[in-house]
Length: 204
Image (tube, rainbow, N blue to C red):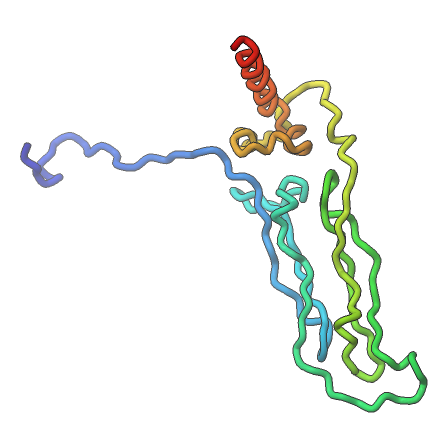
C-alpha cells in the first residue's frame, strides 16, 4: 500500500475525532482561601470555606451530595510571631492569658459517625501567650442515629438523578445507609446477586 499526500485524494477526508462522554463524575469538595490569622502574635486560628460542587458545572450543591469523610478541614491553628514577654499587672488571675471556647457546631454528617468543631481562642489582656499544653480541643467525634435513613422508600429508585450510582455499586458503597437510599434501585442488585449466590452454595 502506498501512502499519498492528503491533497491527492478526491473524496472528503473522514473525521479523525469525535466527542465522547463517560459516566458523570461525582460531586467534589471545593476549598476557598484561608483567612488571616486571628491573632497578631502567639497562637491563633485560620478558617476557610469549603463547599460541595458539581464536577461538571462547578455549581454549589448540598453538602450531603459529597462524601463527608473526604471533606477538607475548615479550621487550622496559626502563629505569626511570638508575643513579647511582658510583666503582668496586678489583679491576679484575671490578667492571666485564658483559653476561650465557642459552642460546638453541628455534626458534619446527618447519619453515622462525623466530626463537630468549635472555635478555641487565646484571650490575653497583656498580650502574653496562652499555655499550649492546656489548650481545649477544637474537634470531637459525633454519632447520629441512622434509623431515619434505613426506612425504605415507597418506590425503590435512584434519587435526584444521581448519575454515579453505577460507580457507587462498583465501589461497594451500597452497604452505607446514605448511598443505599440515594441509589436504591442500583443497590438492590447487590441483594439479588447475594441471594443467587447463597442458593447456589446450598445446592452444592
